[in-house]
Image (cartoon, rainbow, N blue to C red; front, top):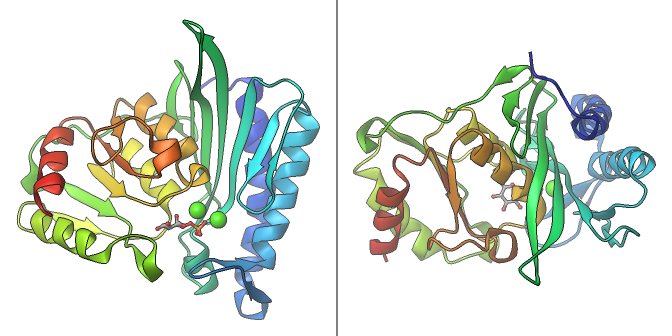
Length: 272
Ligand code: IPD
Ligand code: CA
Ligand code: CA
């Protein structure tokens, strides 16, 4: 039985409360009023309500943390050490199309001074799938869990038995030719490729050993903050697609079980 820290309990309470609202709205998805925020970026009433619920819950429990959410931007906190990084609804396009694959993602970034330099790292994260009531959570040094069960990445070392997920660069978010070349190169070597449409859940599923790897570019910090820690705490490996370590600023990510990381990275790099 996993012992959850007060911080994780705060995050889980917020995610579950927002999740109940999302589920109610998902049931009436046809009646939701949708307005357009930008290309490929629909924002629903449900999204805004979830954003507000999470901001209220987290803000109430830790009023001094900085708050960054996809829908409300950043509000500076007074403590300067911790920042919430929130996607109140990841998988919006699925949600709007009535596809039950979406989640809430909440990460906590901690800042510290190391050798005179400021460094940031994710110290806690939760990805909550309200449809299946699956709470993927992790705390630095404590491990990654699905509800109460400890998570480990998959042990597969062989590409031919590996399932790999990605995100498609729709509506000009990234170069479609690059992605096409990458998938073409992988297709010949892996057991399967998947594109489910919620990056935070994709990362949680790598942590849970459901996929061996996931890659995508042009993501935002709220898509990946919690998932990065989940994968690492489950024993996996996370880099940018080019092997760098600036995922949170570049939005490029390759997360894997560690066993096939170098091989996948090599195939992606050579494909274009
Ligand atoms: C999107 C999803 C999708 C990914 C997009 C994200 P949203 O987030 O994570 O899987 O491919 O890049 O923007 O808009 O549903 O929060
Ligand atoms: Ca998102
Ligand atoms: Ca979102």
